Amino acid sequence: MKSSVLIAGAGLAGSEAAWQCARRGVPVELYEMRPVRSTPAHQTADFAELVCSNSLKSESENTAPWLLKEEMRRMDSLLLRIARECAVPAGHALAVDRTVFSQRVTEAISSEPLIRVRREEITQVPGDQITVIATGPLTSDALSAEIARLSSSPGDDPHLYFFDSISPIVEADSIDMAKVYLAARYDKGSADYINCPMTKEDYERFLDALLSAQSVEERDWEKLNYFEGCLPIEEIARRGRDTLRFGPMKPVGLKDPKTGRIPYAAVQLRQENLRADSYNLVGFQNHLKFGEQARVLRLIPGLENARFLRYGQIHRNTYINSPALLSETLQMKAHPQILFAGQICGVEGYVESIATGMLAGVFAVGLFTSTQPFSPPRATALGSLIHYVTHADAKKFQPANITFDLLPPLENKVRDRKERHRLQCELALQNLDHWILQTAPQTAQTA
Image (tube, rainbow, N blue to C red; front, side, top):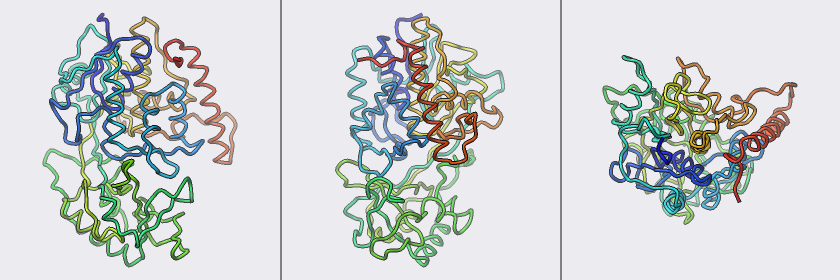
């Protein structure tokens, strides 16, 4: 066995896994193929680049995303710590300046003496080294073929996939501020979102233009299998004329101070960086041609003269059939020295990717030190996320975000939803603290 852990991929999961190994005294070889080879979605060579949006979900206490982040904070997640340092105003959500975030993660990882960064593509997995594969949904063809070789019987394909979308970004000074207003939905948190209110006429005009807009041509080999949590807006619109008003254009809780009324529909813009010179259109990922995007999106009140820094895009996300391939410690059943983390193992979302990277790092340390690793308790958000990834129906496996539906129900029924979630969070954190003590020094926080 070699004297270091190999980690393939310096995205969210790989960077966190490398950090968790190093802070426990275990040397790491961290491979990142960018900038030698890029991907269809990445724009830089920095580690932990956020591709789709800049939001790490709700910070409201006793929500499922908050619980997962709170568990990760108790385990001293590097990336969550950096995220808080790079936060931009986003109401009750944790959103970051994605450029600063990636730069700081790169600096922290590159300056860690126990982490050796290798800017090259890894195409083969060594058989004599503990390896964490965290190459994400855009894993190279060569490594994908290697994963298939390791994980499948002849004729089987271990890879599943879905299509993910990216929201457009506009320059702040191209927004007509006379037509918009600042507010947070239901007044949760500070009023950090720019809201573009629509009348019924505005909405119908926008919807008609959207439904008639020309999409990017589908390649013959592509079956556009979308992730339900990140559908393109034109796909949502095709499900009914009011579906957008109950989705990304939901106006509920967004009273317009100019009229004192809630608009018929609303488009929200979230600050993209610390300079506040750009905003992304929340939930407006799409698969339209760029010229069509400009035409349709400029029908939104306040965006008539919008200058787009980035248009919406779509990319294919590949992940493995984890229930068939992985154990509860993210190890391959057939090759226990190989672990998977991040979106490639079938989680969806930035925080979920960081979480599995953190656990894979902890599990890899256990293997490296000959201490048998074991998963967090099922009552925790971390444990429930891993349980889903490794126990879902292998024939119908789909990526998952963290939700209370993944956690086991309370022994005693509680009708009030808020109180039920509060009790689930309380129980989860108690279980996590006990697990941290059980698994010390692998998981206990260091000074």
